[in-house]
Length: 582
Image 1 (cartoon, helix red, strand yellow):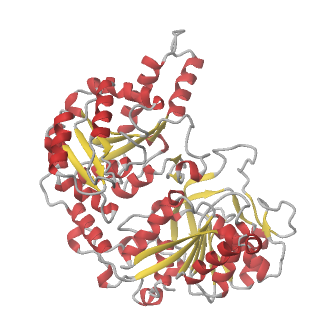
Image 2: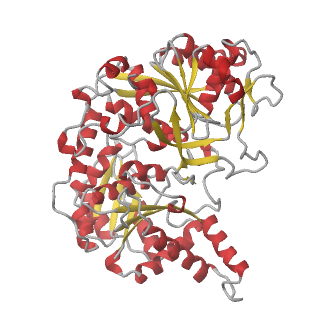
Image 3: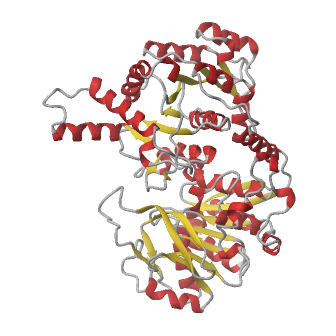
């Protein structure tokens, strides 16, 4: 029987349910179980595709092109699985499916209501999606971790709470359990850990028909025994069911934290699961990784030049990809967030302090990253940063819009086309170096981009990469030859030979642009090649890496005890021409 683990949250949102749900899945997977994950978002939007990054963080893109919540990125990275768009369930999707059924007459003229029709649709969706294979071996999962977004008591999440209240009886108690994540505040005035918010949250959850099996207490410091016993007494659970999840040095320590407190043994008893007793290589790998993260001494700084730098979750996958690569070369990452608009000459007149601070950050960084984005605001500042990185021979990576603007910058400052631009920003330019994709519909918001896993052909060495594209514009192929004559090479293109996917600049330590979003496929033990190349170049290690046949030095690899001796085994098959030997 499928085992279902529902993760709910109390007191406040953004408490870390996604990391905890991912960590629970990780420690269960380390025991030999096949684990899948579902994220439920109670908002009415159909998907996350039209969200502002300031509203909900980044939009994570899946292999099938689904635009989903960033927590699904955590699931894919922690569990090393491939999810689909239906693993992200929203109120909008549920109501849309029920309304479509009503329009077809599937309900035979009955009154369509939240109970039972909406709640039944939620349960049917979960049961169906839980069976979809997410691992490379295509075996049906044995455990489904379900994260319910928001907090208990939100009016938006009520239909989902009711659906799972019914669901626990349909699938039987031994196949369903609830993990409740709650905040334990510690006011600075007294320094005392307070349990009342958690008591109230659990009481409200129980009033809605769900009883938590594990209470995960998010706190800044280790939970005191007296506080743990108090929660146990007032929330009607055993002390072993109260788990302390305090702030740790790295999120990679969270699975280890849960394992140390007996979460696996409790879940195996509570859900009667066939846990293997073999050595857990996967957890050894996580411990080794988190230990390395704590003892890094060398630093490497990357200037992230973007539009949404006030909210780090806007670039969650980009930051993770940089962290994975920094960890692989044993460097501590420092990200310098730069609002690209502050690099523009107009800011010098209006806000000179911000202008000089932004340029100081850029000039002091070891490498420059210009990520994807939309809209004209800040694009000239990004072009300024790209121009500086090209002239100063500073390692540079441009992703999606970052690559397109690198083409614009080269066209303007090397080819002499002063008005070179994307038709997105200047439809009347005489040198449209970046043009609209044929499938893009500027009048439709959502679902109009070329999304999902695609293949890229490398002309230089015939290597083939499979990537996640996320684009609405492409480089104008009619102008390609002008660029290549000046050493600006389009080394990768799509299967049809129409879209320029990868660019590279001759006579530069590392100047790479990619049309796809490689950060979505980055993993802690298997970093994304374009990001690894950027970090290697920024740390001054790229040439030695190339001389060693694209192998990391012994001190940068993981031991055989982890089950994966080095990230190189995968990277060597997926290397860019920029970080491969000819």
